[in-house]
Picture 1 (cartoon, helix red, strand yellow):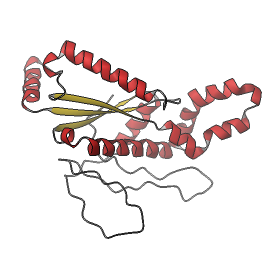
Picture 2 (cartoon, helix red, strand yellow; picture 1 turned 45 degrees about the horizontal axis):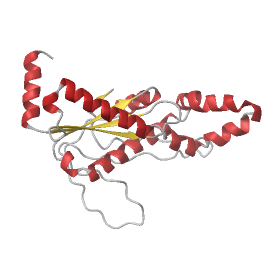
Picture 3 (cartoon, rainbow, N blue to C red; picture 1 turned 60 degrees about the horizontal axis):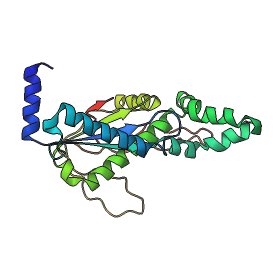
Picture 4 (spheres, helix red, strand yellow; picture 1 turned 135 degrees about the vertical axis):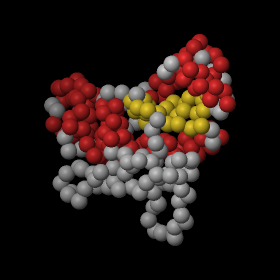
Length: 228
């Protein structure tokens, strides 16, 4: 952007506080134990950059950037019983090879096989649930100029790109109607946020019990400002 556009952006930020929720999506390999550490590092680096490069907006009351992460690999491996399968087909003397396959290659092989839709559904459900949790815990931040950004790495970037390619136009905001009591568990409903509205979930297991495939994932409950 040119200087005039930057000046307009700066003026807009001064007039209206902004909140950016950055949902981080990891790549191949186990990440559950590292997510919190990486999120803390991202937050520290973000604070340093704002203070050094944009001191006028280093106050979180003016510009709030929150990093929240998801762990999709643990759920995918649980549903597909990956660890037990690898143990059965790998000789005991090749434990190092098994760990290498589990940590580096198996996720890519699963995604390139017939488990692509399942993995997309797991990632999408994790994104939706994390978004709903953030909104519930931070109503004052959501009430501001609120945006969501996806920050993905490696295979996580591919999955997020494929998910975004499947999203249709964002419908106008609407208040979900009251529904009669049911014995079925209701799907999570996104809070009413200006310009945002939930869509009807369509994901579910395939009717073919011999293959671990899923139908096309349901849509995200929120629009995405950018994917990095």
